[in-house]
Structure formats: C-alpha cells, structure tokens
Amino acid sequence: MQTALVGMPRDFWERDWIRYLFDEVALDVVEACDCVFTQPSILLLSDSDGRHATAARRLLGGFAARSTPVCLVHLSDEYCACPIDFYRQAGFVVRNYYRPSAAKLSHCLHVPLGYKAGFTAGLVPRPISERRNAWFFAGEVKGRRRGMLTAANRVPNGRAVITARWDDPNGLSTEAYAQYWRTPSTRRARAATILSIPFACGRL
Image 1 (cartoon, rainbow, N blue to C red):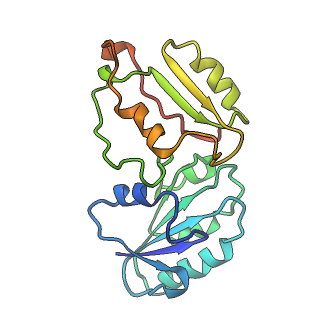
Image 2 (image 1 turned 30 degrees about the horizontal axis):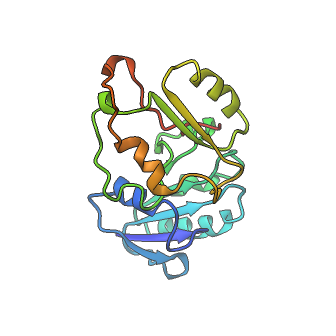
C-alpha cells in the first residue's frame, strides 16, 4: 500500500512501529510529492505545530476528491497545537497523543507512543513474571512527568533514566532500552504484583 510521508524523512524514527501497526499490509513508502491519489493509501504526518497542515489538507483533499480511501497517521502532536480540521477528509485517523477534541471523532483512534527503529531487533518478549523491573521510564522530566514519576516511585523495583533532552546522546541506546523488556529477573515475582509500564500516554 502506498505510504506517503509528510514532515518526516524516509528513515523516520517510528518506521518499525508503523510496520508493526500495519503488519498485514505491504507498505510502499513514497514522498508526499509523489503521492498517487487513485489507490488506497496511508498518509504519515509528523506535525507538532501545524507547519505541515497545509500540505496535509492538500493531500487529503486529493484523496477525498477521488473518493479514494486513505488512513491518516498523525504523530508528534504532543501539545495538541497542530490543527486537526483536515481529519474529516480522512477515512480513518490514528494518532499517538490523546486529544479530547480528536477523541470525539468516531473515525479517530488513539494508540500508545511507538518505539524507535531497531528496538525490536532480536527482541524476545518474556512473561511479565520474568521481568526485572516493576516499571521503567526513560526521558525528560517535564510537564506532568514529574508527578507521574513521584507516583511511580511508590511502586518498588522500578527505575528511571532521566535525559536532558529529546534523543539525548548520553541517554540509553536503543539496544540498552530494549534490554529492559528482555532481561530475565534474578528472582521471579508474581505476575499479580509486577507491572510493566512503558510510560507513553497522553500529554505528559
């Protein structure tokens, strides 16, 4: 299926996750300028402030004018600052940051944040009872995250790796991050008392 990119490079950060979401569909990634409006497509939009909204409207309008099915995947709208009026032109919308106004749309689905490309390479998920950490967080402490971490720290056997900025070179590598999901515990814990939480929900 044609997969057109708007506001993101061909080696975009979430490419493995997108393939996972659409695992039953063969994705043919193209630049937005090469988009063909006559076949069902997925439009991948990365926009946090509306800088690509005009391009999204134009592309979605092209599909709507030809009655061609299109699914819009809207990433990066962390602070709900990007216009979403063009959602009405898409047959279905998937976004990864919760937004109350978008939640009112019957054709819009909110999903958790994805993972960085390479994260699942060689990953063998283990039963929750075999995981080392009750919870784990990696990222910046900003906005509501401070309160989130205060609450999380009440749960024993958790760990937080704090970074200074987005994609901090001094933060965890993709491989090290993945280890938290595949390293067995030295002592087994009951599944009923352990949590596995990749904190990635809402406007944190």
